[in-house]
Length: 183
Image (cartoon, one colour):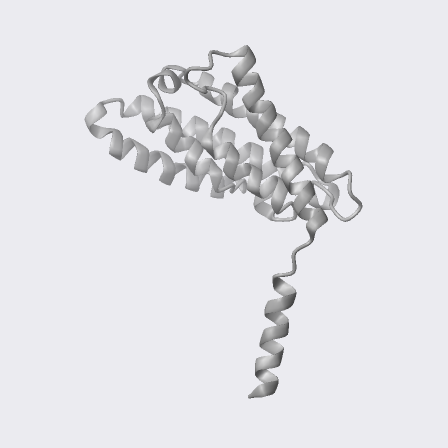
């Protein structure tokens, strides 16, 4: 029993080791990536609605800066997951535009975006939030229609990925994308 306890304790210890340098690079990447999007929004776009800043970008930052080797954090998944989910959300929003059915449109947007990501092998969990924002976002976001797919979604994702490529490849122990393949 003592031996099993010691082995379990060791395994838990090894799995919870914290690499401070890795944490610093994750912090720097997230700060620069999300900060760049926020700065563009603040200085170059109407700041009232935070139109360029999407909550789902924060979730993407966790993956692409903090868990760089995850299949869900690879550029194909990040870009495809967000863009396809945004297009799915906008389409559902146009098909079900009545405010009394917004709950149904939101549920359908998320569910359909998951299936689209699975079919295209671009699963990126924050994409579900991007689809939902096309329905439940502000009036300004809904008014964009398919422009929502291009900006803020596609352009914001490109900025996040460019920063991820730069920051994650500086230290020797990190590389992004995993395996060196962008697509």
